[in-house]
Image (tube, rainbow, N blue to C red; front, side):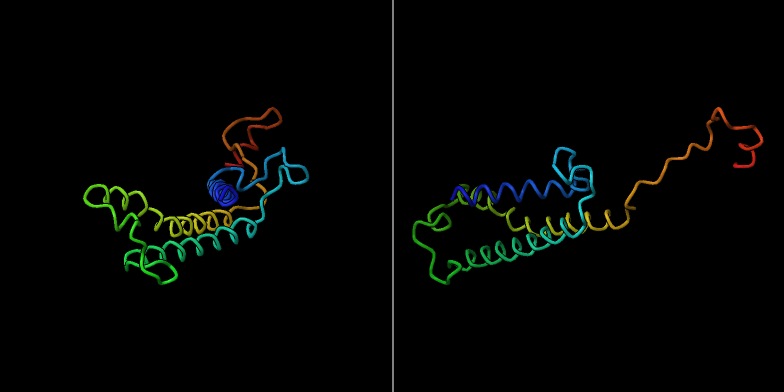
Length: 147
């Protein structure tokens, strides 16, 4: 169980990389990779697979529970929360777990946004040109011609 929790947390942390700066460029403290761009497939493929798996798992689980059975098709145990809770207790239980149904689709949307943003971004940032400011080597005629 601890291993599953650690993997879950690592995957959730990796999803943050789809929106954080370190998801596009490896942090400088990583030996051999620091400062280099994260390859697009290295981020998109695992995220897309994770989104697909999460969507499948939580959809199947939600459908099974709504049908009153386990994922194996057996009836839910008599002590399962949807069988024992009633009223507002059941409403809180459902409200707490229902967002899991959206985890996969939201990760898919995040992955698509990351892919679209990164495929439009050039490998190296374009140089910033200051068209209005005078530089010491500029002559007034050169600035007038550039404008």
